[in-house]
Amino acid sequence: MRERTTAILAGIGVSVVAIGSGIWLARLGAWGLVAFTVVLAGGVVGLLVHHERHRPADPVDEDDGDRHHGYEWSP
Image 1 (cartoon, rainbow, N blue to C red):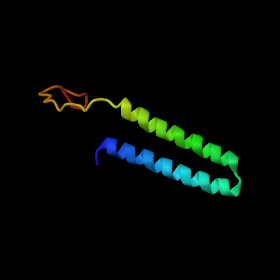
Image 2: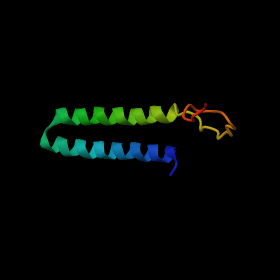
Image 3: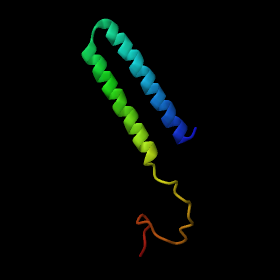
Image 4: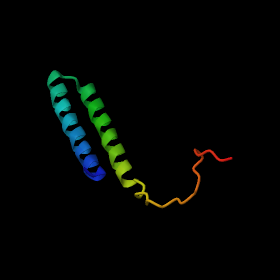
């Protein structure tokens, strides 16, 4: 699955869980927890959207040749 699809599904999933939790907590009369759940879900979805918009470009596979990466032993 592509990263964009995963981010969209994660955002939808977080939103559905937040709405369900909000409805359940509202029935219990816990409005402070409803507000906390909505703010928390909004923050998570906001982070997902921010990450998706500022995702770095896919790295291009380059042939390094004989370039050393610091892990090889050399005399």
